[in-house]
Image (cartoon, rainbow, N blue to C red; front, side, top):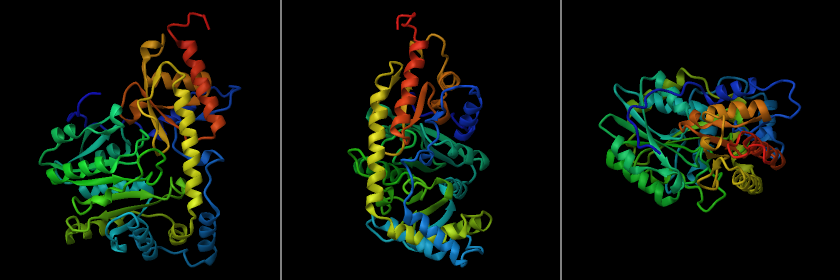
Amino acid sequence: MENGNKSMNTPTNVTIKGILGTLMASIDEDKKKNLISLGMGDPTAYSCFTTNTVVQDSVVQTLESQRFNGYSPTVGLPQTRKAIAEYLSINLPYKLSEDDVFITAGCTQAIEVAVSILAKPNANILVPKPGFPIYELCAAFRNVEIRHYDLLPNKGWEVDLAAVDALTDHNTVAIVVINPGNPCGNVYSYQHLKKIAETAKRHKILVVADEVYGHLAFGENPFVPMGVFGSMVPVLTLGSLSKRWLVPGWRLGWFVTTDPNGIFKNAKTVERLKKYFDICGGPATFIQAAVPRILEDTKEVFFTRTLCTLKQTSDICFKKIKEIPCFTCPQKPQGAMAVMVKLNVSLLKDIIDDIDFCFKLAKEETVILLPGLTVGLKNWVRITFAAEPSSLEEALDRVKSFYQRHSRQQNGLN
């Protein structure tokens, strides 16, 4: 891994959905093999990942009531903001209020809000590599410089804090921390998160905590929200219903100021936030209205079942990856829904890089993986394990067959 690089200020050329769409388009229509996509992090494509009846019934109930067909306040319905504040406060040493919560159209809009609020002349934001490319895209529209700090694959994808120190200057306004990790499948320990908070405090910058995969932890480390350290450093917490409740298409997210000392919440900033929400639309009113019941009435067994399934599929994924010689996985997934795998192109006779690998794999095996370059790492691939176990096994068996055909060592021996 190269050191943090101040020159990386160009946004990713394409979105994840864009590159996956191009990969899909490259597949021959007359292929007899069924398509298996392990590229997009949408678990609802598989029947083993479905939301529960409480979630569905809550929306039906609010829709049928005909009380939520009008506009909601631009910052979100009061009862929705209050419910999310109470939900997040369960894991914090202090209580959030509804005034700390702003409802967004998914976590993507929460990211856009965060970048917009932090934008000022010459500002830069520290973003992980690998990471989620939406940050670069949002920053490009706001003339905010992005500086990439490395995650360390051989240390559980921990933040390279030395790189953070080297990258930070007087124009740095924030550091983005994605936990549980997309695209790496890591979950940070309390101790490591505390070190990140201490580093941010030392540099007098705030933390943007991207916790869209919050609580989806099934390894050694439990999920710890970054807001736990809000008394040490201001934290902007971004999250959504999408992954934990398995409803990504509902686009219900939140932007939350976890800042008990009120450092971030000066009158000018709060007014700017409210004005920003005045010009951008949030999620449907009836979806918002369903949130209090969803948060209160969803049984723990639903979450447990999801985690058990993710643990099972992550185990299958890790085991199958080890059977493919051109792949190396530095760490077994500990959370979220995807894992990063290093691609050794020197073992392949006619593959140039990760982009070439993924396009040829799609064409020959009708399997979609995400090229690592899309998330910041050349010659890596991201594999989503939120899939039916049988489909996951078949897909990775096809990848193994693809390797065997393209291996420099085969020469027709297999």
